[in-house]
View 1: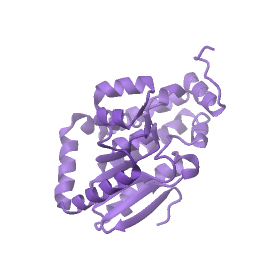
View 2: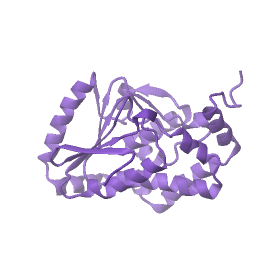
View 3: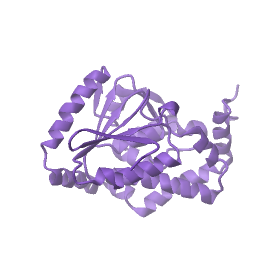
Length: 267
């Protein structure tokens, strides 16, 4: 199956690499990428020959968040249109979160907004030390709602509260400190070498045991159980849809698109 926004490779038998492939716009999300991410994890990644998946980004960054044109559409949609959009986005993250095989994130350059959401649903995350992370949504008058259940489950309520409200930009060492990622590397060369060893180790583990181990953690974690409940998915989708059609988000996103300061910043 051909994908417009993703590149699939398998240099090592049993290991599928899925690369976000919109490097010209820093692998930003749009409707097509959201659709294709859900599709590839339901189909190619689910093939019995695949033992583990590596998720990474082509080009200079892993994922810079939302595509500008996609964001522009959101402020033009009705509440009902926004709700459908946010439900689709939240359900995509849920599909990746529920994926039964080991999912390794290889992160470089930047992971912003929804990019942090992708980082949060990976089981093992490797990052180059200069990678920049940010949950920047409140700067636009919105919140990281659709990724909220997954990020909070990964880093805990304390760090989520601090990072959700501050939109702080931070690098890989802090991302490791808060539990978002697992290993930091001085260079991509060192990261790639570690990745080879890691994938080889996974291939030596029982595939059924790994799937059950992953499900065990999800089932034992209260926040993860809530993240899989339909009422939680609907709640976060509605939260973002309601904000998108409100005056603050309309102003914040418009200001961002027009490269000006929003009206709540006094000059």
